[in-house]
Length: 305
Image 1: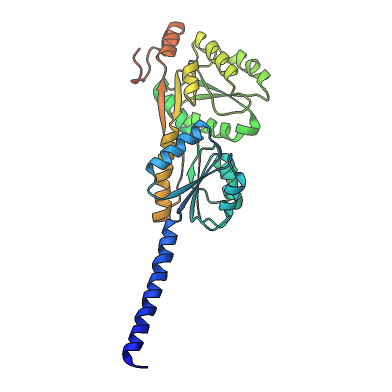
Image 2 (image 1 turned 180 degrees about the vertical axis):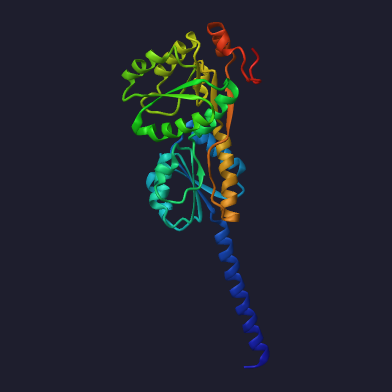
């Protein structure tokens, strides 16, 4: 076989090899590198998804468990994705249960993520606002030497209350833990101490938190000169002096930045959400009328008296 023919065959082989390489590269690049698993279409999850999509600098594919759980489960078990984000507890459980082939997993939009994922390495954003941060803000804005009551059930929040007792001492606050086993015990425990406390701090607790209970406690507290602090906009609308507000879209944007760290730098970050403070002028005015000496000197620049 002459030399020219050999060269022709060699060139054809190189072209075929290069063509196969480019085709396979294009196929790989067309596959979404990020899988997003959504628990359901409730508003907070959709808000976080919107923030994630707005900030995410990668191609992605969304799987809604409420629409097709089996499809989401199939893709969690497959090797299609190197990186996945789970939004909400149902999606988090699915991803950590079935996504053993996925090296990079990130979880958002759930309380107490460590309890959800067990012994797995945890990357993501926990919706639990650190109790140390809440007590720090209370001491800074509402003053030291305050008595702060917290209603809770032991099974759900016993460990958190133990941490809170420690932080309260560090912040010159007196914590008054009020353990309840059911809603019927709430006023039974709160009634005897309502005139001795300054603040009621609500935390996420399935026994305590209901709109009816929160509304009744808040109105009763305000009339007695006791400030209420809560953890979402509902508390503000009910009459809480201070509400710690989580912006769910911002949680999604935070998550996108954590994905960037995870994919590009292989850095796994676990962090609480960013929080803004929402002050209630109407509640402050009621407190000033009911207990003026107690509330006249506050370090709250955000609220005009």
